[in-house]
Image (cartoon, rainbow, N blue to C red; front, side, top):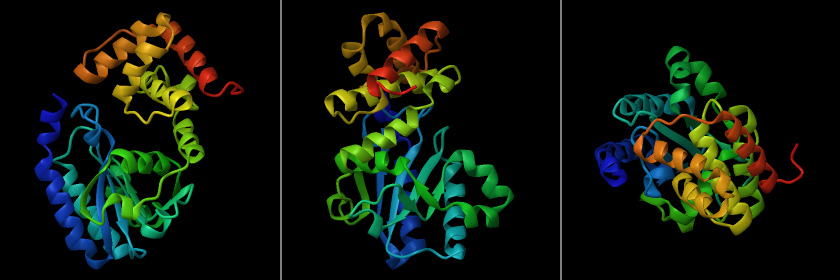
Length: 259
């Protein structure tokens, strides 16, 4: 099912690469695909299309605007969660810099900001992003080069400490977020624990399957329901009390001194 879903977006991905080449020209080092699309767990109702674009030199705002207008246009053809991308300079990829500086970022949650105030967006949408350590790690181990230099020639391996700090940053507020986004939190806690215990680099789907085998049996149904909701879009009633207990248990296993 997942492969059929991603096949629907091959034309969009090809167009994205071609447009990136046209706009960025000789400044472009490469365009790379990561996330669920390369980890065999893409779901058009749950997943976005994740790109890293590497350039040689800083982009002027005029070029950024042309690029963003292209992204917004193609985003209309994207899956429900849209396109997510970060543009970074080659010199932060090798040696890897953490937290990682980026030149431009877009996800669907920023769509309204760009459409209503593009100048403000272009001025402020730059800085550093801890998430890029996790993205680069997936890219290094399982990503796909869409154009440009091969991944091993651009990206150095992210250290275990930087990767763990990045994925921990994504789940450290799980107690507050479990009720509003239970499937994501339940499965993400599994994949973070899988790395902490076994140094496995997994998707949310793979993390959930690992959790079924390695997390106490009292949480099996909770994890299985999250997997069904993620894979099959099957709605499930969340046992909020058990989910909070599970969250506390997992956070303590991942970081015992966390309060």
